Image (cartoon, rainbow, N blue to C red; front, side):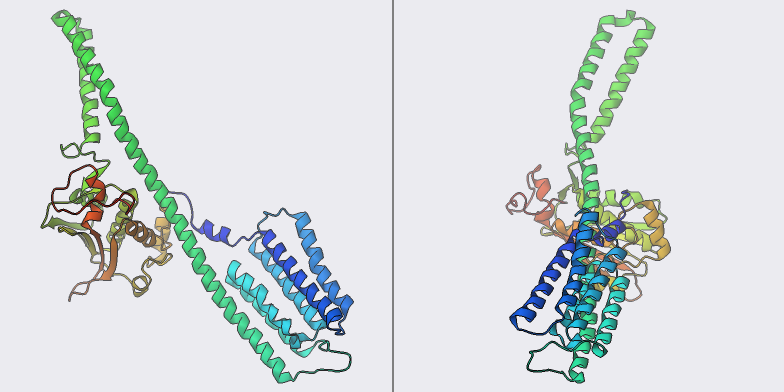
Length: 464
């Protein structure tokens, strides 16, 4: 089990660097200064130049203060970021008040702070900033200084046009806010789920490496144990029947313990007497048995069958796939009422594993969004119970996402459905490999027993 809580990724993802806000505000200050200077001196419009630059200077002073007070790598809390964006909205409103209110075409810049908030802050902060922007826009529609114009003329836009601009700001704030939040939230969820997947895979890979170390230790210990056995036999032969009883007992005990160690090593290095290392390859039926073994005492009937119309395939052990298959079987046992069926089938072309239970089946949301993270049908109590166990993503809807991702990386196709036969109910998961992909790793150790299909190039598909 891992102690990492994926919810921590959510919190960290929303803590933006202060340097990002400072840089964006410098960009806004540059644009505002250029617009004011260009309108005043380039176009000759009568602006309240001093008041405009006082508002712009307030943003500059804030930026300088933040840069002096905090390091560039400092990350803002959601409240602090919302306050900075609120300042930007108020500062923009002040500039617009001085330069024509909503008649000023730059009034659409109210959307910028709300958009930034939607991509980085929680929805309630974005809602508050959106209401602030709409409130100030409403005030500017009613109260503002005249729109600056050339000295020999005056322009006064009709209130209907101003109302249209206000409506555009309202709809733009709502649409861009919701759209940006939805897109950024999906991106965050996918990134967090992939991070959790990497954590799970790293753990399983670590366990696989431990298996490899065990196999290497078994191989290396064989030689010194053989030497100890030879020396023990030689001592027994030299001492003969006249050896002191205590020494004879010690030598007998030593031989028994050496034999015991050799038996343990034999178990570590052989599965069924054919010399294949169980830490490297295993048959399809043994893979199924290994998946089922932890669930035999769970109080759920397990119906297991494996058969085919061709020689049984072997596969190369892959920690990620074993974890994914185990997760699917865990779900089946959790949701089953009384029975889970595990069927393994193989032909000359395909290898298929099907897991069925007699529980309530998949919900419509899970079937519709299969493969997406954070989709779960677990009750809060069950989710909380699993989360206390320490499983990555337990109760968060990450389990199926991680399992599906790891299994599909091996070249398999996974299909989720509900029982459709009359009088039956429950979830069905079907995992199918092309046989040459399933056997590719095992073929590195054993000559093929059938078929003429050439081996795949190394690195084509991850071994099972």
